[in-house]
Each structure stands twice: as C-alpha cells, then as structure tokens.
Length: 186
Image (cartoon, rainbow, N blue to C red; front, side):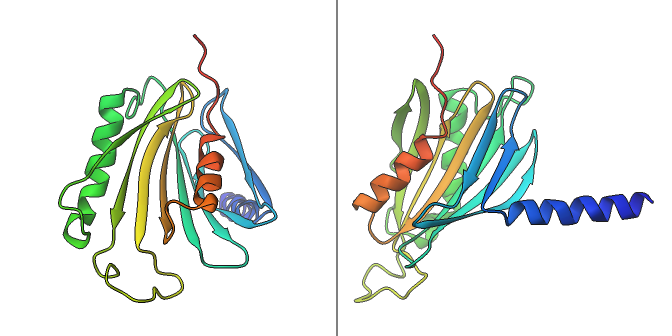
C-alpha cells in the first residue's frame, strides 16, 4: 500500500511539474507561482516544498535564451544566504567552476538592490564561442548568474544563458526574476 501511495504521489508530482502553472511553498508564508506566458514556456524541473524548486524558462518561438531559476528555502534555521556576505560567497563559489572556460580572468560581481533586498550577479563569456562568426542554436555566448533575496525566508539563484545580454528581452527577463521578491518591511 505504501508503494502504491508513493507511486501515486510521484506521478502527481510529475503531472504538477508539467502543468501550465505550478505553485510551491518555500516557507509557511512564502508561496510562489510560475507559469507559461504568451512568449515563454515555464517548467518546474524539481521541487520539494519547504526546501527548493528548480524552474526552467524558455522562449516558445526561438532559442534566444535559457533561464534557470533556483528557489531556496532560507529560513532562520537554514541561514545559508541570509547576509550579503554569505550570498556573494555562494555566487562566487558556484561560478568558480567556469573560470577555466571563460574569457574573464576573474569574476566581476555587481550588487543588486530589489524591493529593499540584496543580491549579486556576474556576467561571464564562453571562450569557445567568443570568436565564432555565428553561434549555433541552443548555444550561448554569455551566462548571467546571480542570486537575490526574495523575502525573510526565501532566496533565488538564477542562470540566464543568452547571446544578447543588453537586449529588451533580457530586461524583460530580469523584471520577471525580480518580480518574485516581496517588498521588504521596515
């Protein structure tokens, strides 16, 4: 019976992840909903309520970008990204693996301020594509990696692969990313 219930729960989780919208909880007060838009297909790749959710966003008509969102429960008992110093360190450590494959010799970290919360991002350039005359579909010259605080209990990591980091579409993507943050209460 337990196996049957576990199998049913697993199937429901898969179905929920493929739905047009999905809601997940990072803490008791923090619920987030993601879903398709007219231009973007949004898929929940993995989720475990009160722990994490991994989301992928792709354009429906082109291969202009590939966005990954990593929602993290970060309540006071976890406190992995609860200070700017911890968050910046996490971003640098997770980005260091790219250093042997990018043009930049060291990471340039930019501070982000959004709705009263802190965050950081860095843009790196794929050395293998830097001199390419054309970039094949599904490959990207730039990766913009970052992390922001969404609330007292939630942090969001992101990885945006794109060939146009300064485009209007990239601006729309960042508005989408930042829209998950709740206004910080004074």
